[in-house]
Image (cartoon, rainbow, N blue to C red; front, side, top):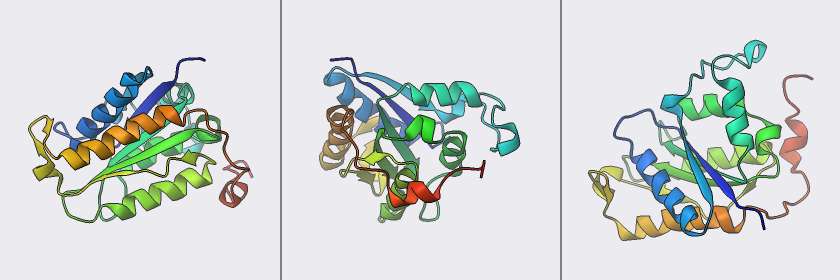
Length: 192
């Protein structure tokens, strides 16, 4: 069996990002099962606001290649106004079916407040439109400032959710997805 490669896209630009910390926990769990991993920290990529007339701007091509090389993809975001972050949306705009179709995707969100679920629902819809297979288990971290002390995650139930996400990214990396979703047939891209 070939080695599984899991990448995580961190949609937070903050230096002390709880999203980044949580994704590293998920990636560590994937490594424990023998996967290779890579954190695609969006702070380190030159991805100007996406312009379909200039899709290879900045690091666009290299970013797409890094995502396409993955067997499983973890999407991590802070919750902003009940949804996912603009940097993650922009990164997803640089990607498409070539990078995501029939891939296993895991979702993680981090909130300062107590209700982070809508961001996960929004990401799940995007992934359906890209014809991904989204892991049913998802990880949400409400009240993130109390879940972490510095770099350390101190909430054991949250740690288990995040670890499970990383493990399932490996376990389901080669799942055979269902036939194309109805949403993907409607989302044919900018060429039409």
